[in-house]
Amino acid sequence: MLLIYTHKITNRLTYTTRQLFERILGIEVSFTNKVEDFIKHSGPKLTYSKQPLQNEFFIRSNDLLFEQGINDLEIKVSDWEGVPCFFSCGERSAIPYDIFSASFFLLSRYEEYLPHVKDSVGRFPAKESIAHQHGFLKLPVVDIWAHKLLLALKERFPDIETKQRKYSFTPIINVTTSHCYALRGFTRGLGGFFLDLGKFRFRSMVKRFSVLLGIKKDPYDNFYELIDIHKKFPIKTMFFFQLAKYSAHDKNVSANNNKFRYLIKSVADYSAVSLSTSFLSSTDKAVLKEEKSTLADLINRPVTFSRLRYNRVNVPGTYRNLIETEFTDDFSMGYTHEIGFRAGTCTPFYFYDINMEVRQPLKVHPFAIHDYALVNFERKAEVFEIMDQVYRQVKQVNGDLIAVFSNELLGSEHKMDWFDLYLSFLKRYYV
Image (cartoon, rainbow, N blue to C red; front, side, top):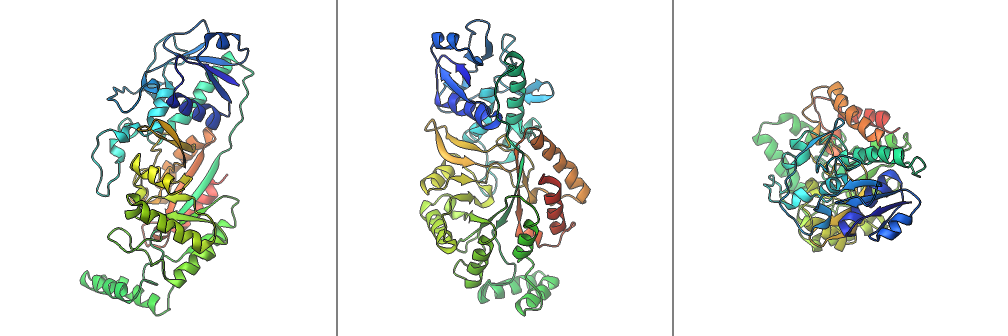
């Protein structure tokens, strides 16, 4: 057990250090603000404060973990042996940066509480993030910092006990449009036909009639092919289905359609199934509760995992709604059109509500890859060049690589064969 001495034990400090030591490094920690208890402790220990007590392992603290609320912070990103870091803490410190404060800043999404301009669907843009602006978005820096700290601790305490995590790869299939032409009803089908006609999309008109006449299968209906592929790999996969009412942002098949309901139940026989929430439900708890209940009744099991429409995480509001609606895990922490680590980590972490200054019981599973971030690549080799970089970083820190794919892109015509690309992902990254 590692004992941490500090002049003031705060929720921010315990939240951050437990994430780094216990969940990333597998080191049990305890805390004290009594000097005598710290001095008589015979095992590994460190001081986190403004001044060291004696000649112990000392990390000079920034003020962030002892403050409350949101303040205007001056952040200067520097280099720590090739890794970007911030909150420099001077020469006397055993490590040159206060990685606890830096980690809290990223994990809590502190910067998303600060004033910023949202994008067209109300999201925090990647370009507003410190990670994007300083070029470390593709690095799980929190995990890297933790492992660099471990190396320093092992020099002082060679017998320190750790429980090493194992790398994992989790592919997610996000289903917000289960069918392109089928099961969409006469009115919507007719509207789609005239829309294609008005824009001279004659190939789409031919495909539409081929599907509706039963000559061809709907291009988005690739669920059983995906299930067959998943059976070949010993990895956890998840499907997130949307059961929203029709709106400007949500255009899936009606949740009352019997064939759609049967599809969801069939997929649930082979894979974990949970809720892809609607655009409206991110701000309306009653709608969110209704969608959750509808899916739970359909698959006859509890629904506790969520993915937010457009990955539209607005802290703290959307996460509070998920908690109040009894979700336990969310898989929306990432950027739809940027590859990388929105919260600076590839390890699941609990949501910290800065306004309430408390760790909440919602576990956040950050994803690094969304298929829509790959659509502008021309060749498969270009995709894997950048993806291999992310994979190596995650594998090096024994993290979780989560990738989000949509049945739409997997069934669409594009510069690359998306289905083949997905299969290559499974073969390349599941070990």
